[in-house]
Image (cartoon, rainbow, N blue to C red; front, side, top):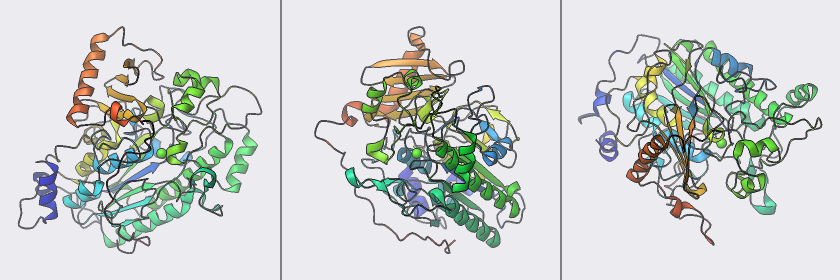
Length: 529
Ligand SMILES: [Ca+2]
């Protein structure tokens, strides 16, 4: 069944028509509980621009620097201790919006032809999405999206199926830079000193939503997309005082960044506390991750050159600062009175946000829930476009999903202490950013990085070389060619944007965009669900 046939079936209503096979068999076998359906709740906590090592716990216990002890994230650490840690967890893209589209629809940004902020034709509301899929498994599911939705998403949260949301929010909503040129400025004014990056108001709406669903005995899906720790930096005064007393971080991030991360952690702690207080922890899955790799805060650091493989000037020209697209100002160096060299934000990974090296796409990735062994580790590569099929599987949906989904369910890994593999149509993970001249393909321990501008391929064995320093392509030409063929066959099959077409041309500002469908009024108070 293709997606159009699937959606036609669903939109015509399930009664009296043959529902998709996986829906018909979905209702049986749910465990008895306080819920009308017994189905689990699913919460996805998505942070913004939080790098793989930007937590106080090690994302990979075998990699010493996969943490920054200066940062204090006790609630994230507690959650990780109760969870399975995916040490090779990936965002589908190294920037916000392509990742956020990919999450909702379970496809690669390459297939969505949405590898930059705009997409030339992809309207999420015209496709299967997480809330639509869960409601098809069981119409009792109530779905909410709080916090940052994304830039140029072309569909509102309600249009893709959420009952409750904060509307079409973006970086500016959460205190990022708005306007252009001389008018660029933080748009949240005055700065909300008790609610930096809207962390606590977003958390409060999420807690209220959960409470309503528990009272009404509805299973729920809730995505909480925090604006932190994306620039601009905001924090509470008491929090930043704590870090001023600690001195400078061991990484490029300014100490104010640590305060923002700390406040984010406090908000997440409140959310976790509410789950316990409501008595739903035993029937609730919590996924925690970030939308792309960490922002690099100091391109002047010589270690940056080592890790990115290019000189800072060239990196800036290539647009690693992202200032033109998403309002970040990442090249602002943190004060470094000690003068000692610091580690780049994403060390030991190579690169940072914007890049398809690991620093741009490998992110924190932990999952807690029924049947998941606390403290388990999983090295199997997983990605956010696996979430839609995973959520459907955890909710009790059976049978095949539409055949244009790229993700596979993580359930076999979650229920088997991380052992096993994920069943996807393509045996590997695809990352595609043709406008910047790069694609990458992760398969097992190996990762191929294709530079379309230079037509140079690099091959890395990430099990031995997480920093992508040893290019094996000359030593392993057959493996390189095989992975290149698999990647390029896929890109052709899904009609992905090509480097020749996607790279900016002289005098061309933006690709033409499809007109967005009409907006609905967002239900900000959440009374509807
Ligand atoms: Ca981001």
